Image (cartoon, rainbow, N blue to C red; front, side, top):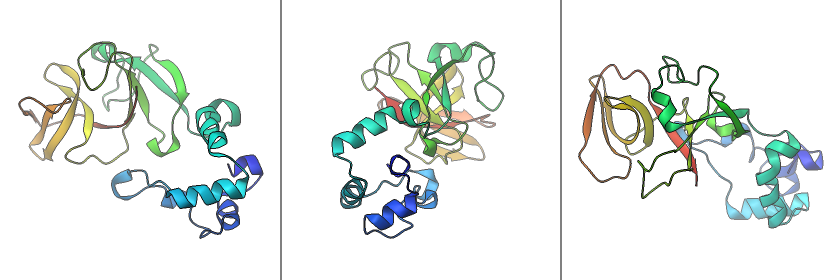
Length: 198
């Protein structure tokens, strides 16, 4: 909104009667990299200051990557079943090779190494159906309870992280029901699933 009005985030905050640092990048994330969103009152005041309706704001969120150039890098996208091919991920679990598609721009808070994985099986039903997309934030801190993507004994898997220690980690099925499974060290990589697109 600030860019559309030729303002800095600080200037928009001041125009809305908020603390000038309200929308600073340093305040957009809480501990462990989780996004911190403005409260409803702050958002409504910013909308009024920028002369935006809530519908304008929703359209801006949807159109930002294509129309304004504001936002993150284009995400690389691949089907979940392709991650076990052996040439689609680096040793750090990052996109590698020519088989990745270019997808929507990444939300900036996911970090510069964010990528996306499309579900092409029913493995995560009933929570997520085929066609849903997982947005991975490799630079985000992971905590017990987070849904993660990691290399398991049967290939790359999405799961719930239960614990992580020097001896490895313990995961549970993505759906939350079923037995826990220990993954012995070294766990080569483990990325937090930060968002899903249904």
